[in-house]
Image 1 (cartoon, rainbow, N blue to C red):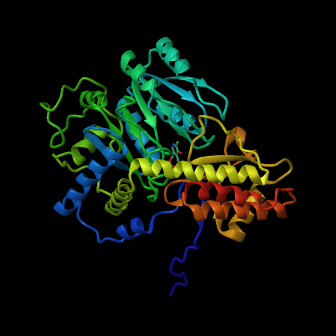
Image 2: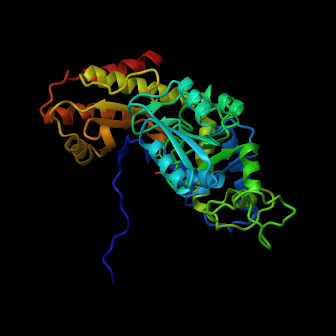
Length: 409
Ligand SMILES: *Cc1c(COP(=O)(O)O)cnc(C)c1O
């Protein structure tokens, strides 16, 4: 007999930029019995999920469906299905996830062009547009919400400029989808990748994506013609065949679309979770949900400042769902995080690269983005920092946050 116990995970207050707490309704949906992936009861759920994803992405695109795998599987599916060897790809980098886009584009043998700005800043859109004119890339790959620095890159002029210059605009909106507007059609974005474990508050394991006919055209030209999979009358096979089988979007769309051609075995349990997650998002309403994220961001920021701590970037381009706090001089950031977890069951995040040891990142995403969580993290931080010898304005943080909440009640 083995001695392993049944899983008994501790309850946590998760205030990181993902994975975040999951709505109990999503967890319940995920205990629904398994269906076969071609069962009409299941394909109906697939179609409903596609419909709801279109609304979340604010698009009329034909294609909006999840790729099975974590968010980067969506990024990888798009980049590997679109980039042909030698294609020029321009990547503006303003944090860690710009490097991820670069890494994936490189593996797909793109000719990479990058531009950089300081971590904590974003680009003036005009700078990116000028660089596109100079480089003349096939693809612009860019992050919308950089969780590593808590910055949000404006895209409303970049999308239309891409259309004008005939560049394909592929956007990583993993952190922002469901938490702040991602206007796929209005901003003229050609392809967008969302994340589940951030503002949608669904477990990690799927990547909702959407793309338009400009992308679909490339997929068609690169379609691998095989007996029983695609016939030659489907498309002219003009482009380099897509290397990846798992991430071949031309095959994935034949599986999600009316043809229902077999590709992989769908992750049915994840689909239940995603369907319930986006259903909850739309039930709350996108506008109300974005407003909620702004409210709790404000309460958190006011609380942090009133306590006597400094925000890393209290700027116009701050990412609403990630608040970066400067670690006071002489304080061991990881020791504070450890004590928050051990004494309070609260998780906040550290950071990467040039910001490691300099800031903490506090997420207010999806189901974790609630009043009691914000008040709890503010009071716990005061307690823990006081124990670490930091002089704070005792009691002021919580009162400032409560003031924000009272002002809207
Ligand atoms: C979290 C995140 C990712 C990566 O997501 P995984 O699910 O870990 O693959 C990519 N881009 C951004 C902006 C993110 O915040």
